Image (cartoon, rainbow over all chains, first blue to last red; front, side, top):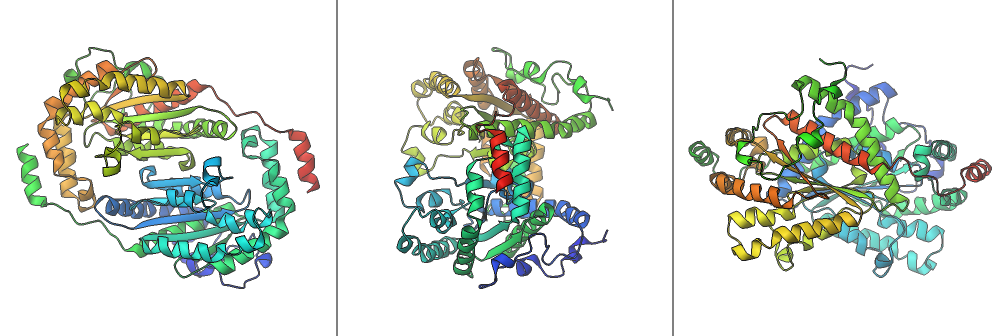
Length: 286
Length: 286
């Protein structure tokens, strides 16, 4: 194993994974490890080594939120069934203090949600200042499942690209750093993961017969994902495309993207809003 | 170290810590480890060993929530500043999947919250089916900070005991298992912990000059806590009182209480809601 596994990033992940408009999504090698020259063991070692730094950076964000700061981070996870979104939440988001996390999964809209525009439930779930928000699926489903299943006429959903970009520009301007990650596994890997959910009684609850229907529409989903990536990867909210057949790589990559995002806020610990020496004297006398 | 640290519980924690009405709170030994005959190293080993079971039990709860179940768990944490509520969230709640956690801290009510009754914001934060809800402070502040600081006249706050019990009975009846934990540190330990927050720049954000005011009212708070414990520890929502000078003990104790609560739901993995063999065939053909 390498002495310093960090050096095994030959290209920084935020560069190696950032979506470049027009790249052919169908040509993605789902088992590749973009930017990373190491093996699984090195990757797992770096992931473990990152935990204290990631936890510290998240705590700094939280500390600033508690002392008047307006910054927050929103991690958006997109991907078809079995792409590993849940594993990212458990293994990456799970490294930080749950106190500072606002997690929200977006499934089929509820009756109440359907009475509002599609951004209503999204706005309600945006992270408050100081929080790490995590969206498991998101507003982008409006140009994915809605498009593929023709839940809206073409002229309606096509308007959403601009709406999504306007919305994210507004969210970013309010102080939220947006990190969008799209996870992709190959059709074969998806089949294996679905088979595991059918084999193991402790995984039955994760299986939905509708998953097979989605699987049968894979080509249409890839067309929708391609256009989503091309049209909603912006300067303030770029997409990172993560090949996810190797779970360890996907988890390492998202950890690095999140750590890098938090570092870029350059927060440090907030200065005391009180006179430290005076408080020490008060405490001593108490 | 003991071979099986679980055996070091000479009295089960849910029995050793359960509040007995009329016990003198001022006589609590804050450095004691009720029920536990082991040392710190044994306790830390048992805590680490519990992680997979706790994570599995929480996942079973979540799985049932996703398949129509109505059960949830609410962990209520009360305690004065520096009692270690945040550490419990990080180190105990941090052992389970963030996807299934609804955490909410209750500070001074916001302007919007003040326009509603005190239970309004509490109801809004109750865990949805399948979730582990965590309250850092709670509705009980209405008979603690409100009482001590005379924010309401006596005849008003005294009504809250019955309201709190009625409310919790209703929440329990809806399927939520309530686990209420009150953490207590000694005045000396509190002083040390506050001093550390003043010494370390990375802890300044946790310090509030108001903490000294609370400290000066410790006797009044203990009277309020005593009556809260005596009057709101009920069969459906008992209080567990945890001496918290030793952080490792408090974390171990809450882990055990939470694990025991989840076990008591006796959920297991939900049965498949589909024909497993038929789905295997569909998947194979896909």
